[in-house]
Image (cartoon, rainbow, N blue to C red; front, side):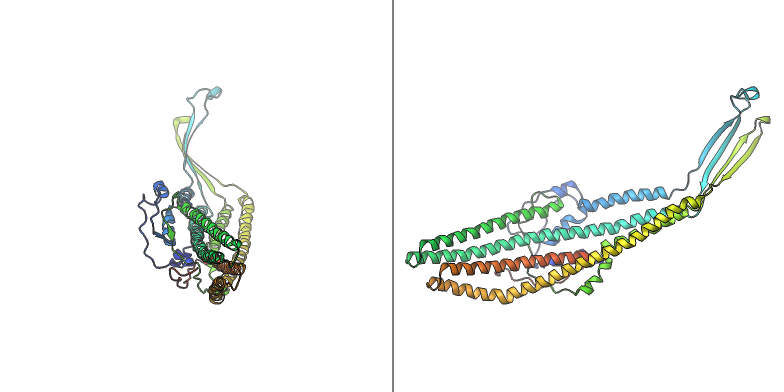
Length: 446
């Protein structure tokens, strides 16, 4: 099965890339070579890496995809073997030699030269060819399925980098507000309006925020290396990636998406497996028709040194009875295949429904947090900072509000990431790419 060109871009829209110019990739050996897979590329300051760049690095050079080319060569060799007709057998027979009496010597030996083979009946040759070719055809679907799995894994690892970058931004936002709290606490301490414990608590909160930033930076480094490992690089050749996890596109309902499952490689495999099974049944049925073994030759007769033609035809008996168990087994495999396909279809539909629900709920939650919760918290933050400087509230009240503000932003980010993972799974199942909302402007608050 060959998917539409849209499947080539499937999963790309999951992260809604901004329209930035991509930097040129580091020069490397031709795709598919070991040097190309392992050539390190030094990250450049300000370089922006996109998901399309990651897909280009994988391409046909990934070992899992190259493996199908080797498997195809093996199956093509097996097809050529299956297409061979029964071999001709040349024979030499010597009779009446080294006996006793009149045939005690070799002078009266009878020599026979013969040529023999088997005449196949019942369409065995065509059945073998069809069976071998069906296995070759099935490789295309297997490769497409593996390719989509690699694209999905690439998108998930890419999303992990985007998440780490956003968590760094969120940590920097938290550090900024904690610094303002430290400055306000120091002013109140110097004015004698609050004890030193308030300043120390504010400084501890700032240290925790800085720790969160350090953790996010280490997570970013690990995520970059994890992504680059997909194409065999030890040192990632990029500094940052483009993407907005909050851009969640509206998608179709479950019924519309379920209709796309029929062409997913996970179900298309069963179509090829059915063709292989049907070819196996025909091959087994062809064994019910007995082959004819024939032989033709020339014999030199002992008396008078005369020559004579000889010939014979033989056919095995009971071929249909011997072929019956193989036919029943091949037909049973077809029946099992239908049941497995039905079970797989139910499993895929269940996965699609679950991912669709996660995405819809996540998109709703992200939008409500942005439109209803965060604006109120931002106004409350400003009012609380002003009130704290004026001595109207304690540091504990300010710290609780700041912690709540950060917690809501983390909740929004985590929810958006979970929705993006659900969208990646939906696109992996359907092979469809969905348009997403415009990314938020650069420099906007998390």
